Image (tube, rainbow, N blue to C red; front, side, top):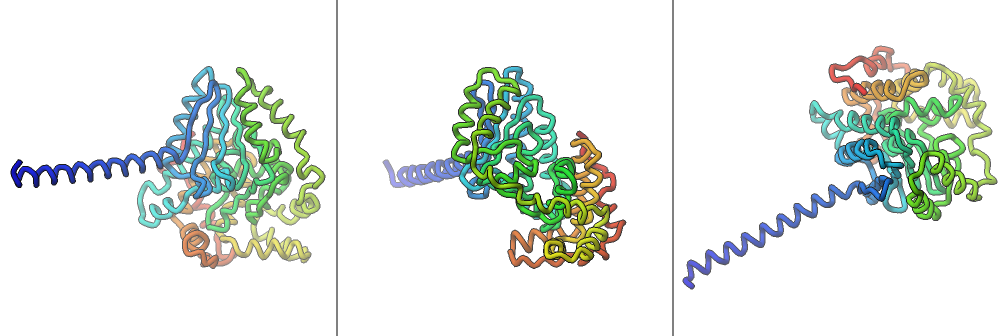
Length: 384
């Protein structure tokens, strides 16, 4: 073999090795993307595993786009009897939506910046209207987008590791993913209180507040899942029977009352105003240590977000889930047009200086017209 032939052979060999490495890397990248959410069918049962434990199973657009068609496929299969959704790892079910990509697109003025919200809400509606039982094992952090993946289903199983919150007013957003439907239905003004303050509920409190339908020890969750998967051709009452038994057998934290029980009356009273100004006034007038604490918490939140949230929840109390989600898409687009969402994410999630510069700075500066602009009809309204 000549020198030239050897040289050509070495070049071809090197190019082949590089091609193989690139293909291998692309394959690994593709697998990583596919594995962000694991969708499997065991007999008549569909299982969704949110598989981004290092990111606390945060929900992104690619995950939504994989989950929705599979959920519809399972629903349309007459043999399907249930769907179970859970999170990988020991920390979170789903800590929320992966909103940094939304912020990046919105800050660049991209016309499809709201695609994540739009498709996420369509998925939320699919869960809420599913014709087969949907069991969410919320064993860990459950916030924002994670709430949307769980609360609209038939059953929500909390554990001592569950941490529930809708903290959106702290980042210039609002309690979306159907929060306008679910939160006002928690009873009294509890949902409004939790949404405005972003207060966290833990463990059995998540059940006592009405967010979860059942409470089970975390260590029993694998056993519970196995028993559900072993059910032969179950209907909803069969699933409920298993969940009820595990719930009744769980003694963990049973002796403790609801941590907010003593505060429910004053929550109804002090958060009973239909304007944010009235709520602030009532808290100031009350003058108790508790009221002052809540007032200081509220003063840290986005004034615009709080006003929008209060209107959202008051209106949502009388709307269907579909109408709430359509309203929330309008609000989300309004947030993308505004200032506080970008500033809140910067301050709390990017730079992490925890010092957002809200604009407007005070609730008095947020006009009715500013709030109304979040509820205007859109050319691309979400239709469900």
